[in-house]
Image 1: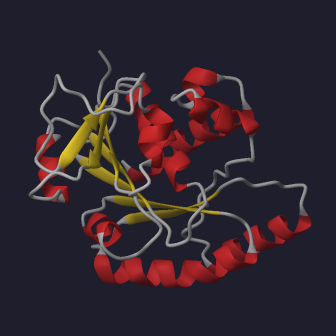
Image 2 (image 1 turned 180 degrees about the vertical axis):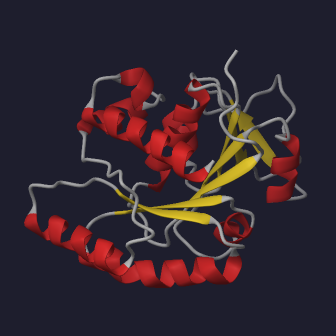
Length: 235
């Protein structure tokens, strides 16, 4: 039985108001990575599209053998995670209800919708740490300042890191954008970047993380580095 790596429960929020930047991939892989290291981990999918459920669940139908908190559906995953998503049941879901249900977790990873309101605001207000996945392109860079400013008004000094994702270092524009991020936000840019790797999509189509699908893929090695960075920098 593994020893918990983080005194918990701690809340890691993956958020960005821009869609398609790798939030779900970051959330599912950080959750799977800490789970594999013996940290009791829960994953909350707050996006109405339920992409974390699609990428991680054995069965897209909610579990019937384990009662979920009111307003939530509970799903099984191949890697042993507790995975919750808001349901359409009467009474509605609340974040605090899900967190209370998972009181035995050491770590809760939250995949937020592409917005800074509603669920995302509630998650940021409760965050111990916030991971901001971003693509290295002009529009993503423009949104970072407003994202960080919003976090500053909502959260009580969380540990925040920007995570470049789908990065292609051979492309000059992406290198230039990353250099601009480092120049403007040197204390927020993490040491790890996630490369563009077809294995990530392959793993998602099988409902597992890269750690299970292809331990030697470049994306797997990048996420392993990210887990180490999160553990050593945050805990």
